[in-house]
Amino acid sequence: METLHISIFVLYSVGISLVAALGSGLHVMYRRGVRRHERVLDDTYSQRFEQRTLVAKSVHPHLEQMIRRSKSVIDQVQRKADGPETTDALNQVSEWLAGAAGESDRALRSLESGSATAFNNGYIAKGEHAYTQTNSHHGR
Image (cartoon, rainbow, N blue to C red; front, side, top):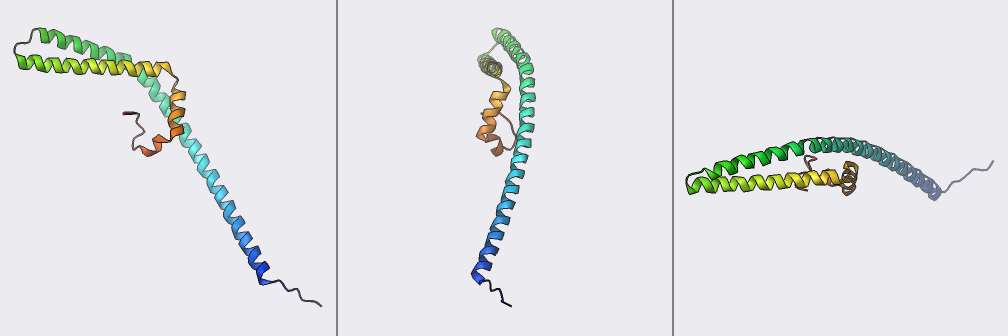
């Protein structure tokens, strides 16, 4: 009877191949899991983004109207103000309110000009939300 001699090189090669195949399989499984979690997070984020956009579209007109009314009241009080300090303070508040009304108007126009999905897809594609602590869009 002959004895089958398998060289050590063949055994090592088979062992290394098995370990490499196992490692590759684990890596593929890990990546699939990560991709699945990314999809779930992006879907959840997209839904929340669309909800916030709808809320913003409904709130901005009322906010802008309230700011403009406040500015009108400040302007009326300013006409009756006595003293330069009061006038200066009211001028400053009036300027702030005018700026806030302009910002609110620009924000509303940008919300109405594009779809929430388009804004959101661009935002997710950049991956910016991954680096923020609050998923807020302020300052962007």
